[in-house]
Length: 225
Image (cartoon, rainbow, N blue to C red; front, side, top):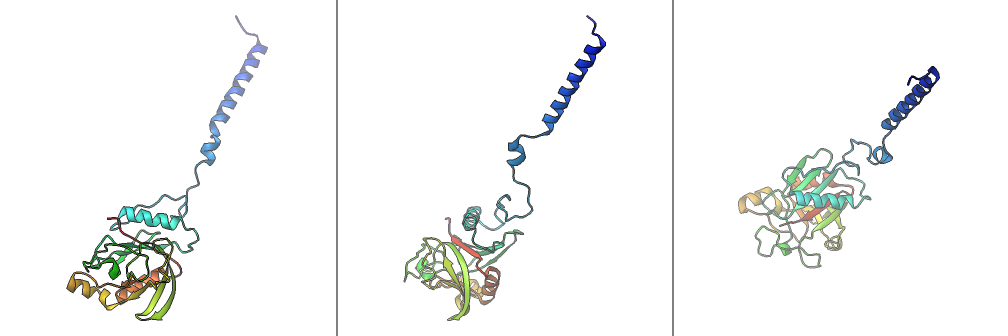
């Protein structure tokens, strides 16, 4: 059956309208696709940024715990550098890691642990304690505080942020240098001496650590094995 001119024009208009509607619908994404993904960001410290993998030389599990500790405390203003102490390693090894979270670079130093954590002076941390008079190292997250002149010269206070190290400030756990933490001691005896729970470094290393972690930056100390 043939169509007259008026019917042909009517059917052509309907077809063109359907085509326009189909084209328009396909060009608009669903709201979940448009708004469900956060915008890309170049800031690695943004909450939307992918979590970085552990830098070379740092236990991935320990790094993950340190990042979780930092991420759960948004009130910490300076988040570019974090100190990670791997007390699974012996004192003869550089186990205090200064991690630049922007570049992923790592600077590592030897650090002594408390004699209460290593009663046999094996060079390894055997236990942690938060108790007064324990002379032991404590695990957990810390934030750096003021500097002062003390028994070992220029030193830096730290404050414990977890129940495992909440007494750190009252126990006078600080960052300081000590003769028994010099690199020559590790070379000659195969281990460093022991502190009374403080983070004790060589004189040069203490300066590097304090200058990089000043103004309320975080330290995370623990052992996983």
